[in-house]
Length: 364
Image 1: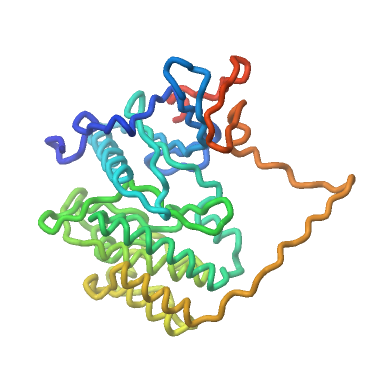
Image 2 (image 1 turned 90 degrees about the vertical axis):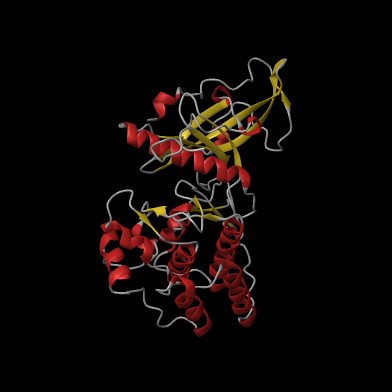
C-alpha cells in the first residue's frame, strides 16, 4: 500500500509478526559499515526461550542495519519507502547466496537485522589482493554465486538495481559470496514506469545512467536487464581485479558508458569469458542474456578449464617465544555468554549479557 505522495510509508507498511523484533533484544556492537542511508553494526540478537523465563535464551550473531532519519518530509518518506521495500523483499526471498533476513523493527528507528557475514565485502577483498588477481576458478565460482542470487531475485520479479562489489559479502572462509542491500531493489512491472533512482553510477546500466540528466523523480522505462549489465562490470572486475573505468570519476564513467558506449577493455580475456562479459554489457538491454543463460555460460566455461591444483595449507609452528597475531575482537567480544552451537542456554543473573545495548539514538 502506498501513500499519497507516491512513496511507501511505514504507517502503511504492516510487518508480519513473525519478522518483528523487539529492539530491547538487540545488543549493538562495533560499526562495520556506513552508507548514505544507513549504518551497519555487528551485534547480537537475544531470543528469549520463554517469556516466563528471561534468563533462558538463544544467542545469535547478527548484522544490524540502522536506517538514518530523514530531515525533510520528502526525505523521510523516501527512506521509509526504501525500508518498507527492502523488508518486504528480504522476507519473501530465500537463497543460499542472498544474505539471510532475520527480522526488523520500525520503532524507535527503522532497523533491519540479517545474518552476520565475517568475510567482508567483495570490494575490500579485491582491494587487499591488488595487484594480484583471483584464481580464475575462484573468480568464476564467485560469479556463479552472484548469478544464482540474481536468478532467484528475477524469478520473484525483483530487480536489484545496485549490484556492485560493496553489496556482495563473503563468508568467513572466503568461499561463498552473498548478495546484500535491497535498499534500491524494486518489483518489476511491465505496465508501470520506474523512477530514476540509481545506485553507484560506475556499475549501473546505461539506461539508468542516462537518468542523471532527468528531473528528480521523473519516470523512465527499464527492466531486469539492468542487473545483467552490472553483473558484467562485476565479472570483469573479478577477472582483472581493477577498478572499472579507472581514471574516471563516477559521473565521467556514467557519461562515457551512456553516451559514448564506452566499456572496460575485454582485450586479453579468454575468448569464452570475453563473450560472456561483452554479451552482458551490450547497449541494447534486450540483447543481454538472462541470468539462467549466464549461469549456463559460466558453467560451460568452467568445464573447459583445467581443475585447480590443490593447495597445501601452511604448517603453523609455534613456540614459547612465537608472537601470534591477536585474536579478532569480532562478535565473540560482544556477549558475556556466547552460544556458538545455537542451543538455548540457561544463564545466571551474573552471566546475562549487559551493557552492550545502545539506545538507537547513539547509533547516529
